[in-house]
Length: 286
Image (cartoon, rainbow, N blue to C red):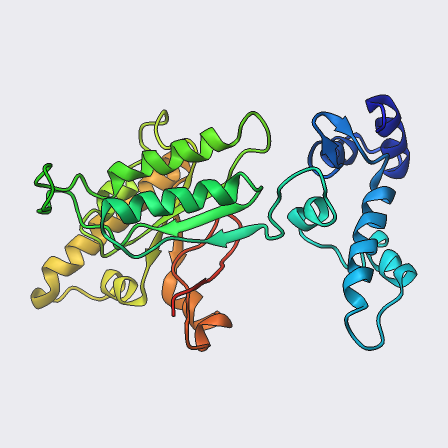
């Protein structure tokens, strides 16, 4: 256990007077036991990591030495993700050892929606960022067999997932959520405008998955037989561009390019379905 004054002094010295780095390390990476700081500076963090990596190394031939592991970490030759820096060897908190996840079950049902919400909450409370796609949900006005008789559509559930993100923060590290939808979904226009009210969906980023076919239709010369599809594409694109200019969202994911260049998508049982707010990750679908 160390006083905040001692931790700040040692960490500030370690970072050669850099207040920003000092504040970030104390706030996000220093082990914390119910408010008590358990590490004096990043030196202790790297020792903790090196100890755990060295322990695992003993399971393999020609293990790397503790000193070499410590050097690689402390000199930033290897820099693990933030959740690893905080979670490895942490006896005081339940923390994910992964930064980012794509989740969700492709079930167009209330059970599926709630299951995804539960997955999101469990990951976020362990420090992880999350993304999931809403394209599998039926559009608003569609018939359902429950007492409601018709669906409110995918946009109505965006606020639910956004609120879960805000709630799980618990006055600490905030959650990070990305919600995506395909440009061909009947509710794509509503999705694009979902954050026009700046008081809504404040706990999520949103992005639209745009296909090569959509862009080819958008950019094609006018053809009478394709006039309706071209007009729809132009209207959606103009709406998307306007909202991005107005509110800085939604983002655009050129989805065919993502899946073409994705290393994981060449393997059976893997399929890109969405992104999290930082980068593209994958979900096992087999």
